[in-house]
Length: 267
Image (cartoon, rainbow, N blue to C red; front, side):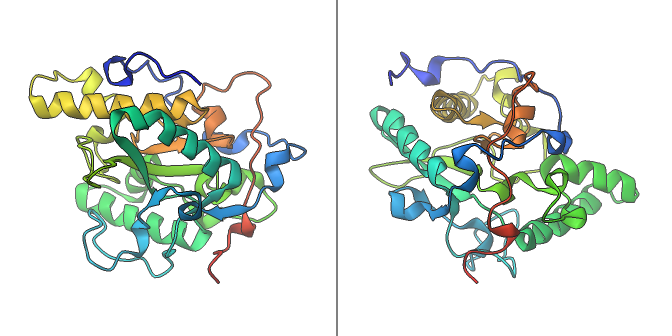
């Protein structure tokens, strides 16, 4: 695999899809694909840096600022995802960077905690809104798990497949987080992957955020991950959402379905 000249200098392409809710759930899944039955693995055991965002007790996981009752202590993903992330780190090595994964496989209980929190944020941001307004806003950043059924692929959140990861970059030598120009789960336009491509990036801070987002995007897409254009941190591999975010290419199917029946691997 050959690294491009400099990922940081390569502008991000226009998004192939502008779908920002749950249209991906109608994508078919190839249940005969060998990835379909892959196990979940602990990413840390594959040498991937992790920081289990939803179980932090120090209050430093803003904007949530607390641990979810169902938060996992470790970060899990499918086996091929772990291998692909190792490839990403190989691409990042010349830049002195590596990925740090904040969330991967998300049990339905965690998805419910996140959905409830996202609705809280919508109500704070739009106090004059109604349930329809708040739900529409929350759907841009999270999946409503209330209709979840184990045997119905049209109800599976993408993180429940183990094929989706939320991640950022950090310096290998120091562990210092890379400046991405916006924090994880910021429910505003700054979270759009192309925000600094489309904005007038005049300050040094804006230029650094733009370069780092490019570095993450191109390193991930080089090995087969697909970005969700409304969240610079979210990438899918072989999931229903990955097909949607490629623009629904004709005949394309997902390979990953529901993992662990949506239950926690730590129970």
